[in-house]
Amino acid sequence: MLNNLAGLLESQGKYNEAKPLYERKQGKYDEAKRLYERAIEIEKKSLNENHPEVAKTLNNLAHLLHLQGDYDNAKILYERSFRIRQEKLGPNHPDVASAFNNLAALLHDQGKYDEAKPYYQRALVIVEQTYGPNHPLVANALNNLAGSLADQGKFDEAKELYGRALRIREKNLGSKHPDVATTLHNLASLYLAQGKGEEAKRRYERAIEIWKKVYGPNHPHVATGLLSLARLLSFQGKFKKALPLVQRALDIYKAKLPPQHPDIIRAQMSLNDIDNEFRNSRRRRRR
Image (tube, rainbow, N blue to C red; front, side, top):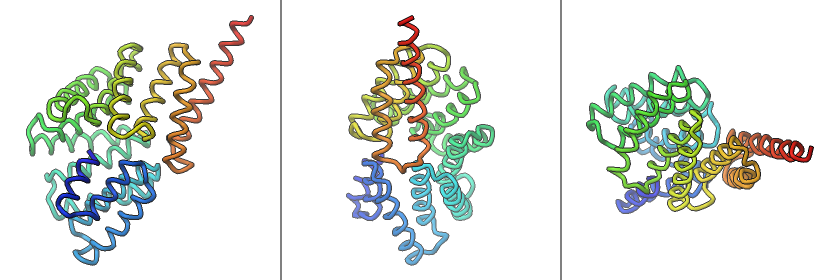
């Protein structure tokens, strides 16, 4: 999606908007951050600091900081973008829905699921009213709300929403789109939580395959899929198969993300846990 948007912007002569999107797609977050910050300064001077275009770039920078694990600064920028959009565009504009969604995603990643849920719900209402029930943006909202429900243990409700999101995305975007991979990955995690390992495994593997084809083998999304698959294998007692996957995920994260990023910390903890389980299982077999 980032690559397609960047290509569209480039074809329209909007090179300054396109370049940071390309950098984000390639995992070059520091360069993308610099470009976004420069764009914000230019837009503030040529437009004004409360212009919707400024809000859009603030949102993009906030999302980048969010990806890097800088949650506090991401929240500040998301909220600034939200206030501008609500004031200038009205409370029911799709860009306001996007702002609701981004704030909810940040709260979700901080484990604040109850706070995130109403923002996700409001975003869903706005995009359904604006685009109808079968638009890709509706699938985005469904996918995000489903994730919030799943993390609260509401698996049946989450599964229904994930299924609807997947059908919309496959119909509108094709079966090999990265957003399809995201929903497959989320569904896999839901199945894993329900103890349905083989159903989860198939979906994790398909998501990884799509992400590799779209982003290349060294992107953080690929690492996320590999780490999830490694955890599944470890739950099945297949520690020897899990270890190289979690090590590969950790290597990708370290190459692409800041040193203290939460994904690096989680991957390192998973590697330690799986390695300990593997060693313990070998000791038990020798007794």
